[in-house]
Each structure stands twice: as structure tokens, then as C-alpha cells.
Amino acid sequence: MRKIVVGSRNSQLALQQTNWVIEKLKELGLPYQFEVKEIVTKGDKILDVTLARIGGKGLFVKEIEQALLDGEIDFAVHSMKDMPAEMPEGLIVAAVPEREDPRDCLISNQDYTIDTLPIGARVGTSSLRRAAQLLAYRSDLKIESIRGNIHTRLKKLETEKLDCIVLAAAGLHRMGWGDKASQYLSLDVCVPAVGQGALGIQARENDIEILQLLKKLEDEHTKLVVTAERVLLHTLEGGCQIPIGAHARLVDEQIHLVGIVASVDGKQVIKKEGFARKEEAAILGKNVAEALLAAGAFEILGQVKGEH
Image: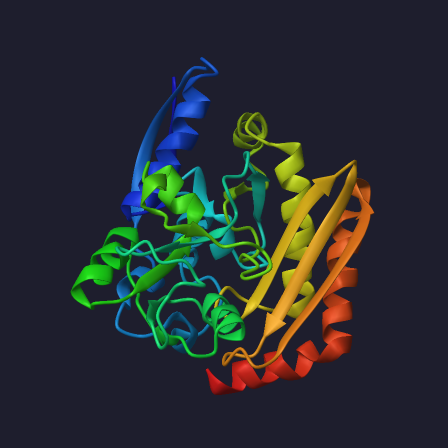
């Protein structure tokens, strides 16, 4: 019986996601044993600096990708939103399982919503994308940078006396904590990160046995919409620390894609959208990205990169 070693970040949420993938593979009843190897990434080590200031792409994946390339693990489970648009030679996304809720959500002990938060409310988030869009919607809000895993951030809601924090709904759902959400933010308020709510299972492109196994977890619908979003990110040359949002969905055999680029202070938000046949997911991502660039996104992105 072959033993398959699976790489994962060592946060509780990452391990939950990795174990979910392993359970799905075990359900296939194939002759494999699974072992999880926990790997600490640069993004997990540096917690006293905002993600944007650490800089670089792949803050939460680089060490795991290296373990894959070195043959220490057989595949890795990532949050798709942490994966840069480009990956090292020799590695591919082997499968994209069914997506969880892609939205952002607001968590408040007073059950505030984005509209009922008091003037000057203190909002905790580590994401420039969320901060920019929240400020665009309500310029009076005070954004407080909070880093750490989902537990740490929930704790900071109390210890730092924040009025609310904003997290990805998918993480709460995967931890079984969906009831903690005070409000799910609509796409009109906050367009999610590229690939938010989806998992990316990464493997070596020459490991045929592993690729065939992982293919059984692929969700075609999710793969299509995430492809459109990731091509948009790639065309904009953005990473997960830049205020770029994208959300694609299937509507009657067509893909609808919304993309935004915002200045960090929320004073400039460029939003573009488009439709295409589902076979043209990649073309749609490129077209919407080019429309954003033509409308001024290039200057905003250059400014953000210069500041951070």
C-alpha cells in the first residue's frame, strides 16, 4: 500500500482543509495511506508586520512548494487565494475541488452590519483589498491591521476592543463556525479575493499516479470560474497583498466575471465586468483585466507597489 505524504500549513484551518481532502480521497476506497506533513511558511512566521509590507508573492506557499519539488511531500493543499498566478516550473494545480462560500463576512459581538457600525468604528483586517473596499463604502471607518490565524483574529476582536473584524466566510464554514458571522458582505460592498473559498491541490506535473488520483476531486464548475479569476490576477501581475478583487460565476452556460482594483485609501475603485462562454474562461479573465488597466488600474497598482 503506497503511503502518500500531504503538505499543509500548520494552522488549524489549513489542517482542517487538508484533512477534508484526505477524507474525500479515502472515500474512493483506493489502496493508499495518508500522512500529513506540517510546514511553517514565511507568512506564518512574521506576524508583527502587515502582509503587504513583507512583500513578495507566495508568502504562504513557497516553503510548501519547495518540499514538493524536493520530493518530501507528494501533494499539497492550499487556499487558492494564497497561490500566486504563476508557480514554479515542474508544479501544477492538479485539482480544484468544489468551492465554499467565496464572500467576506463581518463578525461583531454587537451584531453590527456594515451600515449599523458606529461612526469611526474600528474594523480589523489584514487585507488591503478588504480595507480599500470598506473605506470606499464608508470612509469614516478606522482600519486596524490584524494578523494571525482565524483563532487569533477572533480573539483580537475582544482583546483589542474592535467593533468588528472581516474574514473569509469559507474559513468560518470549514471550521464549523458559520453562526459567528454577523453579516455576509454583498459583492456590491466587497468583491472577494481571487479564488477565495476554493482550494488548490498542487502536485508535481510528472507524478502521473498522484495526478490521476487528485483528478477525481476536480469540480469542473469551480475550475472554470477560478480560471477566469486567476487569469485576471495574472494579467494584472498582482499578488494576494494587492487590492485586487475578482468574482466569477456561471450563469446559464456563460461565465460572468467582476473585477476590481482599488487604491489603499478606497478613494479610487475601478470595477469592470464581462460575460463569455464557459470555454472562454481564460480569455474573459484577460479581457476584464485589460479593461481595468485601460481604465487606470495600472497607475493604482504601480502606486500601491511603490508604497509597500
